[in-house]
Length: 118
Image (cartoon, rainbow, N blue to C red; front, side, top):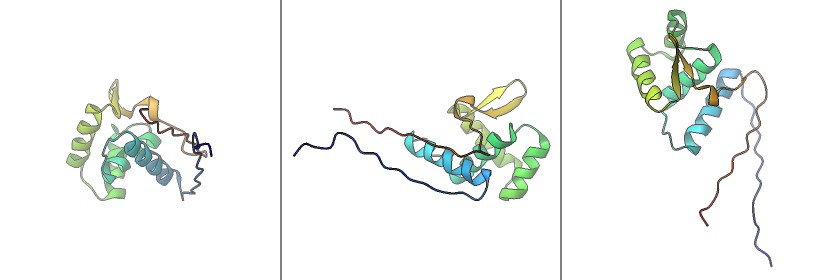
């Protein structure tokens, strides 16, 4: 019998809104890339991706209200995420790196290849 060369597994999941969809996407990216992002960091990335930036005072205030956190906590998270290039500075705005921003109002299909070394 010939061994199977590759395996395709399809998973489907519905999320209640674009924020939850974005959180799921960034959770997967964090896991696949060994970023070890905390749930709060993932929430901030998802929120920022949808809002466009986390620099405006009203965006920061809304994030703090929704997720029951503080502005200093946001600053610490931003600092960490900028160091690993998840968040980037674009002029005066802090945004999610364009490489990992999607339109979370639409369905998303991901293809993940996990390759062996030999």
